[in-house]
Length: 168
Image (cartoon, rainbow, N blue to C red; front, side, top):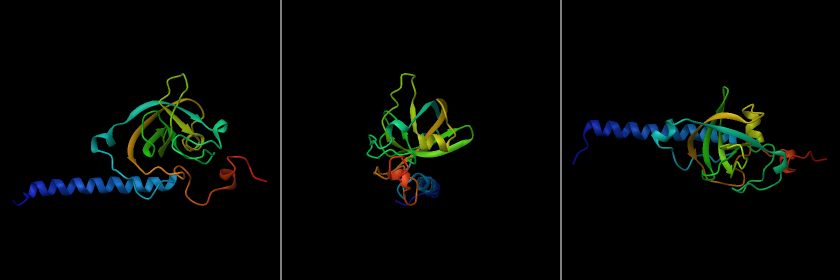
């Protein structure tokens, strides 16, 4: 049974949309130390949903310790903790004109103020967050979890290898 022109056009538009979303997410991953391509594109309805939530940030007391997803936390790690999203979920976080795509690297937050997100110190710095704030979030994809997820692209700095302490 031949495919009608209207159906074929709709399918072609859907495939093109998914491909564009995958390319955009892959470019964002390069800046957060992610893999070259996301493992799944977000659904069209989920990609448009923006939510707001309370975000805290964590860092110095946790440097050198392993996250729930297997990364060693250093000042240069860029990511976010969430209680329910799977490791490797990519979340676009926006705050006061700044936006960043970050992977879920840990579980939390566990503060008693009702926060929904816990930014790493590297993510907080990139977004100019210095205190507990209200952020806007959107799930944009996912990537494979690895020990290097969240590390900046390029060779690791000495301070990253030393858990934030300057070697010397």
